[in-house]
Image (tube, rainbow, N blue to C red; front, top):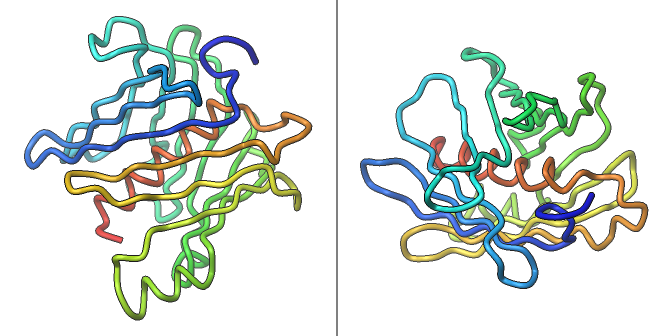
Length: 192
């Protein structure tokens, strides 16, 4: 992967708007903006288009929820210019009762990996306080390939994505970035 999505580290800044929904700015490890998205509130079927910049003239990544009434919340990640499917991202609903757990799928909906919340942090958040930032490990097969870390801000959250553990470069960074945005969006609207 070259160009916009060739980095192994990303920073996603999420701003919460009281009426207008959520906004996301995606930066690479050099601090350059690689994507911007605005997720409107109160839509039954989620769709997020990530653009090259805030002017929203060039779409660079798409995310669309597959079904409205789906506890597993499966999302298709695609190239909005070609409609090529990059992969899928879906929630493991029952496992997420204890700790947030998400599945990563390839273009043919075969499960290839998982994103799991740190168990100790999950238990602290569920039993003591919601003020514990989330931390996830990303695995393909049983091999760690990356991490997501949340940092709370006054008007939103900041997420740090690190895929430097992925020595074989098997996780498409677009799928990793989309997964973080999906998780942040779904969990923000669910209040978890």
